[in-house]
Image 1 (cartoon, rainbow, N blue to C red):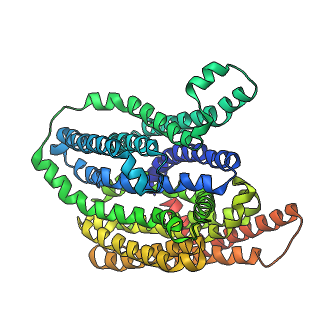
Image 2 (tube, rainbow, N blue to C red):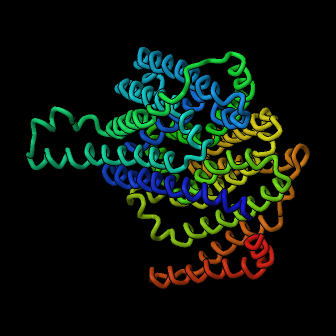
Image 3 (tube, one colour):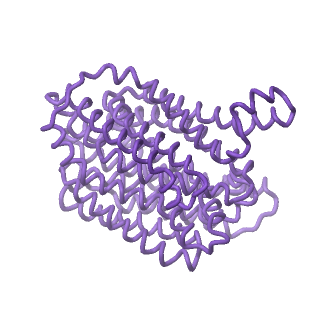
Length: 491
């Protein structure tokens, strides 16, 4: 229990920062969808950020997890950060230069012929973020969660402030004819959604400046031998991460290309906005991932490591099940996260929440191939998931639209969980309590379905009834699982 409490403490710090960061970041979603009422406008944002996630994987090429793997060895301590940082700097710089020079060609290929500046802005964002990723990893490895959180939160705060300036303040000043010359010097209404990207770029630059002292701390040295070791470990993770991003983001890219041309961009906008409603589960999974990866590596040599992994999985799934219920039972309130034009897509929310739950389980299971240095299996599993994602999207989008993408995501992550579980039993067996885990998930789905059986027009009565259902679920869990939960607390 002490180990779980330590993980919980780290998760709490990462969680608070991630929650604050994500809440601030996702607070921009209502701002964007209420300002850009045309769903096609937000479709531009959704699609381009999908491409950003995809390219970001290439530019970090698995070095973050490789860093945690070799940071355990003291003999690599002085050279590891410097070697990886040098590698990332060179590749990021090459990418920025090439993308900027070829911005017109790339913009045409992306079907944004009139906006080559988007390519330049995103090249800078991706390059800066890729380079600084090693310094964030170093902070996590040194357990400097507070500093990590401070930089992350600052990044989002700057991003939010810039969005407010460009999308609210400057248009207001122009409307009221206040400081017109000054505003016109730095603002043009024609840029439109481009200011979302400019705000992100400014935030990335501020992040780099905040992490610059970390850069000054490292001793400049590059070890070819160490770099080769890192690459051997990391490149399978590149395939894994690339396939993972395909699973997470390719749907938005394919929706635009496989939907009828007259509604494709609008479909992307609706799907992207409603995808963001899974915010709370995504936040928790991300916070857990930040804390769990270094924790699992540090814990691996302890005698009770496997028991800890099993307990963490059970508690993790229980919390995700509660989050699922919390969102779905209060969807009548949550729906106001997006403007009315986007709410037609709310039916994807429960499917995507369950998909994210499966993804969280997969993150837990993935420890087996990371601890045994069999990272190629992670790549195989993720590639298998990517094949499922692409196949189902190509098949279902023309039939079901963005609902096909939602189902493809759920099926993909569930399949990856099943495969990883059975491989894990062979190479690094952990006694996960399968029946307990399934009861948490199935129970939450049943309770949600019960809530849909009754049509209650009064919103206050409906929310009260759903609150009772949530309490009933928690009471049932405690009643049937009290021995395990109490034993865990006392341990």
